[in-house]
Image (tube, rainbow, N blue to C red; front, side):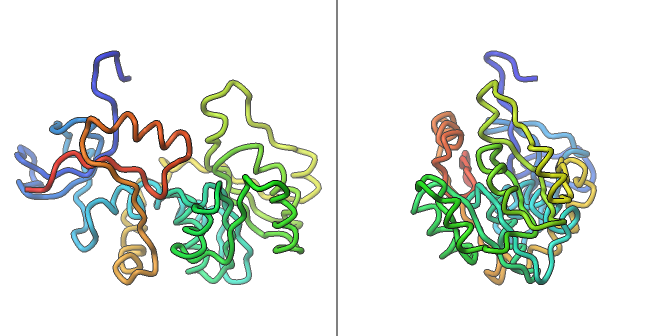
Length: 271
C-alpha cells in the first residue's frame, strides 16, 4: 500500500533500459505497475511486452485495462450483438467510449450519457455513437424516452445511482445490466443502491464486472482490437499532459470529470 512520502502506484508504458530476465531486452516497450516515477523496477512476470503495431500509449487506454474492461462487459457478460440497443454513461471515458464503439462494431445501436455539450459532441462526432444525452441538462431523461421509446436492451453502468436508477426504468423486459463502476460514490459515504423491485419487475440480468477476472485473456482483446485501432474504426482519444510535476493536478481534473478521453501523464520520451 502507498505510504506518505512514497511512490504512488500507477500503470505505465515504459521502455526497458536494462533487463536481467529472459524475454526482455533494452529497447522493448512494456506495460506494468511502474508507479508515478521516471524510472522503476518491474518484475518480469508482471510486465506485458506490447504489440508494436499501435502507439504505445494506446496500451493504457483502448488496448489497455479500460479497453479490456469494455470488452469483458460488452462481449463476455452482456453478449451484445445485432439488434441490441446499448446505453452507457461516462461515455467519453476510456471504458465507456470503447464500450459504445465496440457495441456498434458488433452490430448494436449505441447511446452515450455524458456531462456537457462538448463531451456529447465527442461521443457523437468522434466515437460515432448514434446519439448522446447530456445529464447536466434538465429533463435529460425525457430526451432518452423520446429517442428510445421502447427502451434499451443493455445498460453499462460506470457512474452510480443518479444514472442507474432512471436508466433501469427504461430497460426492456429481460434486459441486461453491467455494473462496472460507481464513480459518483467513491468520494462520498452514501452507498450505491439498486432498486431491487424494479430489477425483478424488469426480469433483468445483472452482471457485476471485475476486470481482474479477465486479465488472463488480455491478449484476446489486443488481437481483436489492434486492427480496428490501426484502421481508425476504434478511436483513441487521450487527454495528456507533459511532466510528472503536473500529475497531481491532472488527477484532480480526472476526479472532477473534466478529462476528455484517457487521462495520461507523459513523463519521458522514448530513447
